[in-house]
Length: 199
Image 1 (spheres, one colour):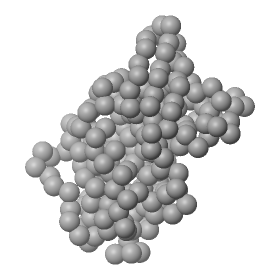
Image 2 (cartoon, rainbow, N blue to C red; image 1 turned 90 degrees about the horizontal axis):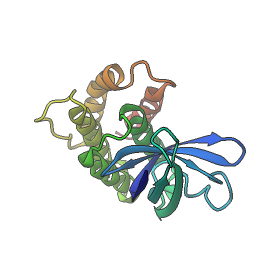
Image 3 (spheres, rainbow, N blue to C red; image 1 turned 45 degrees about the vertical axis):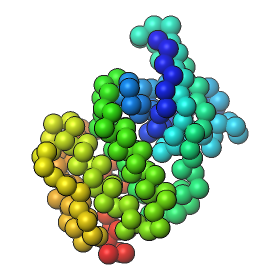
Image 4 (cartoon, rainbow, N blue to C red; image 1 turned 135 degrees about the horizontal axis):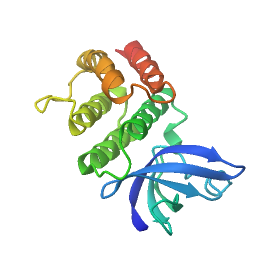
């Protein structure tokens, strides 16, 4: 197996003293996992951050082997991780994607929508500029996995965003996140609380 593609890093877990097992969302191949040697080292630590856009190279001798991953940073989300609201939104979207999507099944619309939502979080002047994109991504994810209505549109103002988040929460929890390790919904609940304070 040899893959080279743009990818969004959606999860990273420490492995041993210096390595990381990372999961990536690619447009063509879907979610892929790889072993990043030295992922916790000084050079790669700023690269192996969920939300970052990377140039990914994966190679494995067999389908049963965890591929080795080489990553080069294309776009960093690191500067926005110091802002609590942006960090919470990036953390939620990447955790949701990593938890809900099956491996090696491509969902090109989701790759493009996640990249768009992450860019909006990082470049909009405030949460009012990206909250609708975040909810739109949740709706698209549900629809792509067969749980959402085809005619639903992302909400406009912040009041509608919060109403949509409240309505979508139980659906996400029941259909996409039930029986998953860790409480992924806790990240969304924190984000909803923070957005509620600025509404």
